[in-house]
Each structure stands twice: as structure tokens, then as C-alpha cells.
Length: 159
Ligand code: NI
Image (cartoon, rainbow, N blue to C red; front, side, top):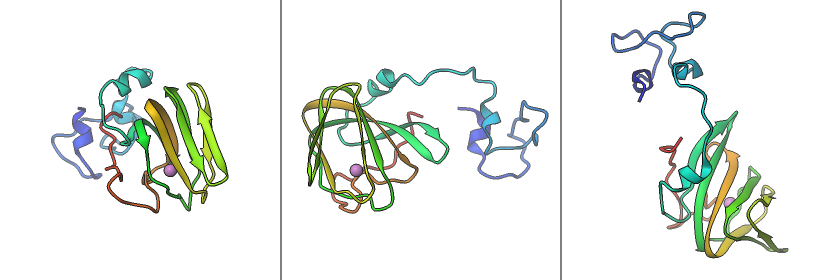
């Protein structure tokens, strides 16, 4: 891990490395330039998915403005729930996933996506194991208003 990432505020300290971009505050911390020495690299979704086996536990792999890109493994039926404040995108990578809605079901194969509109009750279900990518705002809880034992802990350890 880059040493600068362990510092949480803009204060001087001997352990800090100067920002490699001379145009920036040499002590800037919460800035993308702290990773300037890492070459650009793709996020490999299959590789990320190979790093865990839990079901219904989304992992953040990238951030886009105020949104997060997550990967998740699912199997069986989730819980009916609603996200009152946000839409939620499901893109199936592997396997088959059905998004149950009160108005009907949406069946997704690899390469297909569906956006659940905000406020619409939904319940994902997969007969076998399926892998999906999610796009949703930072802070969305997977079980929405329902809560319960399937509520996942926020996990950005694969980012
Ligand atoms: Ni949801």
C-alpha cells in the first residue's frame, strides 16, 4: 500500500511522501495523484470475481464520480426490497439472473443488463451461481429498506 494512503488529513508529518506532481500541494492526500506512480491498468472483472466466493456480498472494484462499480456472486433467492432514492444497475457477467419485479420478471443472460428504477420493489433470484456487475451510488445498502441477515458489509478491499 502506498504510505500516503495511511494518512487521513491534510497535516504535515514525516511519514508522508511528497506528491509527485509538483503542481499540487506536496502533502495532498485525498487526491488521485497519490497513485501517480502506479501505471494505468484495467480492472479485470473475472480476476476480481476469482478472489472471493461469498454470495450476495458486493465488492467495490472502481468508483465513477459518486457511483461505485461492484461485482457480486449470487445464488438462490435474495430478499424483496426497495431503494427509495436510487436506480440500480445489474449487468450479468456469467450465469443467469432473474430480477423479480411485482409487474413481472426480467431474465438476464451474460452481456445483458437491467436498471431497476428507484422505488421499485425487486428481488434477484438465480437458480445456479451467477456473477454480475452493479453500478449504484456510493453508500447503497444491498437490502435497501428490507435489512435482515443478507445485508452486506461495505467492502472495497478489491478496489
Ligand atoms: Ni436492490
